[in-house]
Length: 327
Image (cartoon, rainbow, N blue to C red; front, side, top):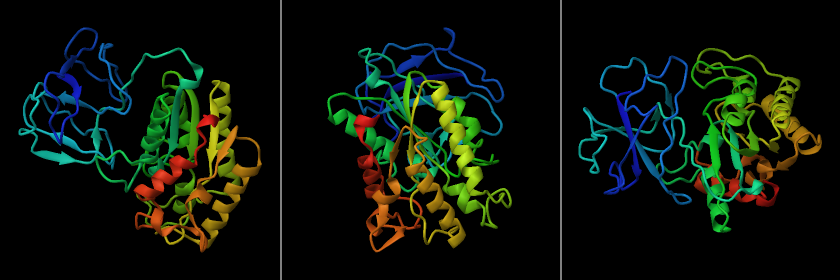
C-alpha cells in the first residue's frame, strides 16, 4: 500500500475541505501487509464526534492480486485510477461498489475512564452486518444502538462484527471463519471491549437443508452442536472478563432456506438461549420482530422482502429491544 489518508466525509466521494490527514505506518507513508496478516497505522491526533463519518482513502500504486473485501457493507466504496489521496472533490472517483476493500476498522481513543463506556461488540451474520438496510444511511441495528447511546449524552463505541453468511459451527470459503474461531480476533482482539451481543445460528440452520449453499452442500448441524458452539462463545467471553448477551434468532418462515425441521431447531435454540441461564443477559429479538399473526414470520413492516433480513424499521426495532442498562 503506497499510502493512505483519512478525512471527514462529505457528500458521495467528496470529503470536507481542510480535513485531509496523512496516515503513517512506522513513520513511513507506505507499508506492506503480509499475506493473511494485518497492520495498524500510527496514532493520529484527530478529534471526532459521536456518530461522525470518516473517509479513508487508500492508494495502491501497483497490482495487488485478489483483494480481500467485506461484501455488501451497505456503504459505498469509490474507486479512481491514480493517486487521489489528497482530493477533496469526487470527480476522479468514477467507479463504485457496496463492499469495503482492505480496511477492517477505525480505532478511536479518549474520553473519561468509565467502565460503563467500554465498547459493545455486535457479533453475528448478515442480520448484524445490516444486509438490506438503506445504503449509506447507517440504519443497521448496531448503528441505531450507537445512536441510542449518543442520545443519552453518554456515547459508547459500538463495533459491528457481522459477516454475511457466517455460521457458528462451520468455516466458509466466502463468509469467513466459523464464529467459534473468529470470536477471539473479532471480539476479544478489539481494544477495551466490555460487552458482546451474540446473534448467530440462522445460517447453520438454513444451510443444513440448502442444496444451493455457496461452496457446496453444508453439514447438517444438530441442535446439540449449535448449543455447543454458543457455549464456546460464552466461555471465551467470560475468560476474557467480557459480558456476553445472547440474542434469540429472528424468524425466517418464507425465506429461501426455510424448512419445518429448521424452524424446530430455531425454536429449540431460542428456548435454550432464553431459559438456560448461560448467557449473562438475553435480548429477545425473535419476539421483537415476529408477526403477531404468525410468530414464525417476520412482521411485514420489519421484513425487507426476503423473509429473512429486517428492513430499516426492523433494524431499529432490534436496537430498541436492547436494554442499554444491561450493556
